[in-house]
Length: 274
Image (cartoon, rainbow, N blue to C red; front, side, top):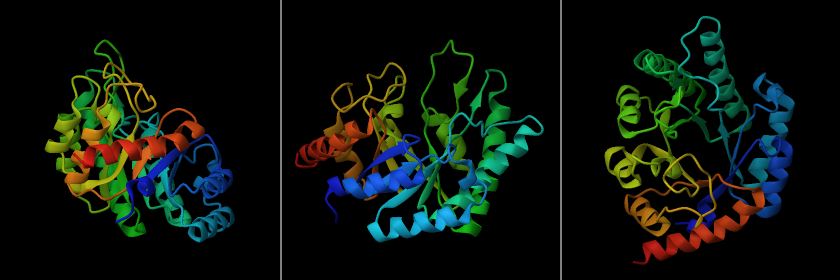
């Protein structure tokens, strides 16, 4: 079993384009990276030459790539024309993952505006279900991320931000091409609780654990120790469950996350030794 340090990656997101992200990961010996391709739309339009070159570099360096769609693209879209575009967006990411050899694609449950919540959830479930069938054919893996609760008075609310909403999605989506991206800091925002997410959702479906600290009051991506998450206890519970996948940092700068790998590995060791 690899040391936990060797299972901790870095979400580069849009901080670097594809080629620079690979060079950076190779230079710093980062084993897992997440990348959003929206800044390089040509890669979502089937630019094969760049994809083949990037894939060779990733395989040679044994760096494992995941793709991360934008949560701002509303997967729960119900409007004509825009609904078709949301389908095409997910399909483009699935094809890009195949071209690049990406091991997973993080997707989201969309968002609603109050009274349209159920209609939006049903639209999102149908759209993700359709995308999952395509992912099965393309041998890709989708990971649905639990998103952050917004303040009650906010007009717009992310979906799949609490246990009941997540269960609504996962209970209706049973494709082997769909798993869970467990974002710990989102599960720590009150009234959510990390331990409840771990007991009521199936960690066997989990393909990535996303890490940042927060104070439990609102959406934050703080460095470990700047918030109130008990990382040793969290690592102990996740590892005890049998999870042996990768962890993905998503906070601060790239340098912050380079330092964070050792910090988090030490906190994990502290928790699992108890």
